[in-house]
Length: 295
Image (cartoon, rainbow, N blue to C red):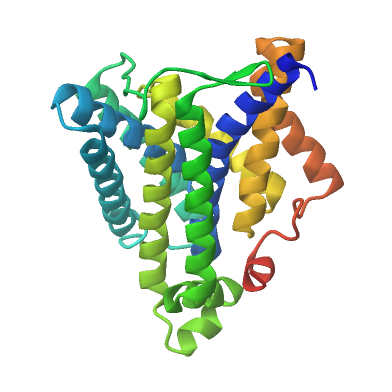
């Protein structure tokens, strides 16, 4: 493997880890509500914005700023679910999907009014000195991105398999009506999944902002790519969704490095179209409740 190809692979895995986290957030909400939350990308942007403001604006230490951003966005996700899903008079799936699109527009507009249109930056977690690896270079922040993403993925997997709440969420994903008849609080699980997905999005925003900066419109495209990653891996499978993010990130990096940056954004949607034609259920099984129930 040449140094150039290795460099592209490192870059792809870094941004792909973020896509994977965003895709996991999509899955968390979809698994319990069957709703695709198109505001997920805005939670990524909001996490980065809040951390940057707390760190550079308020002068808080980086760990405190990161914890504040994740906690605040999680709370915002919980409140947003209560004000949208909870108050919806017609809680059909399509109506709720449209509500999430409206929520994304509102969040973007509020952020633009509060923070303006200028991008915000966040210091690297552990310095700027790059590490050499077989002729390629790896920034410390890239290691933070990949490591934190894997840690979150493991935590989500253990939560879904080992905890009582995770078991209840899998039961609700398999059959909401039967789960409700068995006494499982499906409504509360919906609220919890929305809040957890918002927190996961905030983590993704916090870890990627030192590398890419963030602005009010940063969440739209990353949200769409996270959605593509979830479809590529399998919308009902959190592990598949994360794998889809890695595949998408590597494909984008290779397309940009070998073909030109103009091809980068087109790759996600090209992969999505091809996969929907060849394997609509995603790489790791199915979309929907049956796949989730097997996790």
